[in-house]
Image (cartoon, rainbow, N blue to C red):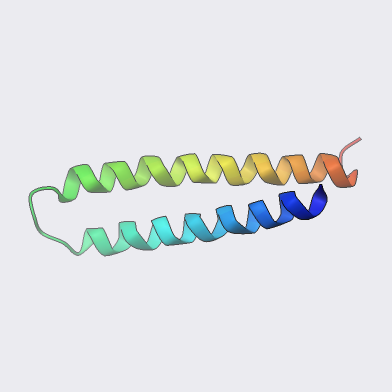
Length: 67
């Protein structure tokens, strides 16, 4: 179980980095949809970060880091 949570955590971390880079690239654009796209990317990043934190907490419970 710990291996599955660890892999899931690393995947979630990679997705956070990808969404963050997409948001930074979006800042360089000057089209009309830039603001709404930036808002959507921010919401997506916050959601993926919450998932990553939940996986990290679950991993802590599984390996016995929390009593």
